[in-house]
Image (cartoon, rainbow, N blue to C red; front, side):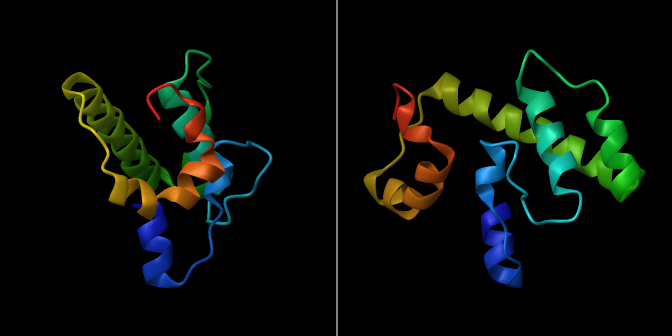
Length: 109
């Protein structure tokens, strides 16, 4: 969604920031959004990530971001539980993102 949104609006982003904390995602509150995403999916959660995001973007935006993170976590669980395959065509479309995020290193890739 972020990549599609960036392409549609002409805003440059760096999705590599998701995999590499030192990279600036180039969106308002980007570093804080990445920290929130990491907190949502890791055991080493940053308990202040949502507070810092609220400080930068405001509470309504922080709540929206937390809802999106929760929804995506749910989507991932559904995909994992059902074993939904990714087609070759979809892999080709996402080749750049897969490479930038290093997703090819996972056994299911």
